[in-house]
Image (cartoon, rainbow, N blue to C red):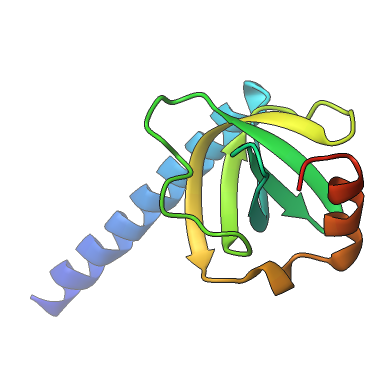
Length: 121
């Protein structure tokens, strides 16, 4: 009986890993990416992802209000299209996962200063 349970558990784990690998392959093939960073809401309500010292403007492409419930400084993981190089950079978000709470102090001061100078904050 224990052998059957162990085999069933191993098969389940293997299936989950195969599904995750297949999902990642599809994302890469279609040009999607994933990034982890901090959420920032600009003064006009635009959602931004701060990765290291780089702000990225995110557009919600799902129509499900992806950014509701997020506060400035929250750590998030985003699945998105490619990142267009501009300042600030831009991308289309398809999924957002909140990893932890944060505050505005979690955003680098150099980023907030630069965005304030450009009128985003």
